[in-house]
Image 1 (tube, helix red, strand yellow):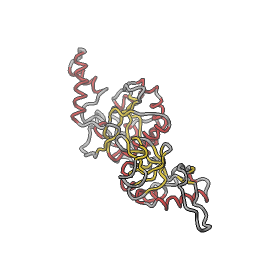
Image 2 (cartoon, rainbow, N blue to C red; image 1 turned 120 degrees about the vertical axis):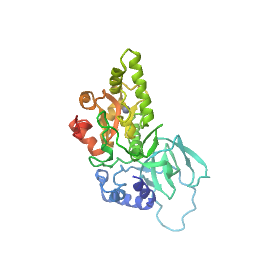
Image 3 (tube, helix red, strand yellow; image 1 turned 45 degrees about the horizontal axis):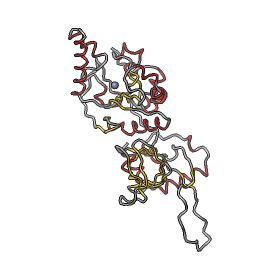
Length: 337
Ligand SMILES: [Zn+2]
C-alpha cells in the first residue's frame, strides 16, 4: 500500500490529467473499467477507476493581459484526478499557493473528502467546499475502493477464538479515529469511513487494537461483575468469556477488529443492528474486506454472543465469500471445533 501511495504521489499530475482527458474524449465508459489486480498496473489505472466528474473552474479568471497572438484560450474546464480523504488528526490547512508560508484560505477537516485536480511533489491541488487551493500531500490518501486481497491462510485470515489462541506475531499499528489498527489496513479503514460519510452515515470507532494488558483488564472486570452477582469464580469466568474474550483469545489484539457504532447510538448491544450505520456496514463492509464476525446464528462456532458492532478485516475475497455463503470465519477456514 505504501509503495503504491508513494508511486501515485510522484506521478505527474499533468500526465494523468492528459490521459484522463484523452480517455474522456475517446471512451464513454471509463468508469466501468476495473482496477487491475497487480500493483504496478493498479497504479497506472488509478484514474480510470475513479468516477470522472468535470466541473467548471471555481475561481474567477485572473486579470490577464490581452493575448498578443491568436492562440486558443486554455480550457476553462478542470478535471478531477481523483478524490482524497484527509488523514490529519483534526484538519489540514488549504493554502493559496504550494508553499507552507502562503495564506490559509480554508481548512479540510479530518475524514472529509476533497477533489484533487493535480499533484505536485509535496502538494495537491484540491477543491473543497467551494475553495480551490493547496494541501500538503502528507495528509491525503486517495479514495479508491480497496483492491487489497489477502490469500486464504495469510495474515488477514488469522483465527483467534477460545480454542485458537493468538499466535506469536508483531503488529505495526497506525492511529485511526482515536484508536489503533494494524497499519496494513489503515488506508482501507479510512476509505470505508469516508465512503460511509459520503453516504450520510457517521461511524464512531469505540475500540480497535487492544494490548494483552488491556484485554486482561477488561476480562477481569467482566469476571468480577459476575462474581458480584453471586456466580462462583469458575462460572463467572466461563460466562464472562462469552462477552469479553480471555486474553489471547480476542481479535482486538490483532488490530484487525473494529468496534463501530454511530453518534446516535453508541451502545455496543444488539440495538445497534437497527441503525443506519449497521445497515451500511451490513450492505457494504465486505467490499472493504470486513466481515461481521459474531452473528446471532453462529455462536456454536464462535463461542461469542451476537455482536453487530464488531467488524473484522479478513480481506476482500474472504469477506465477500462469507457474505455470500453466510459462513463465519471458523467455517470459512474449516477450523471447527
Ligand atoms: Zn469487538
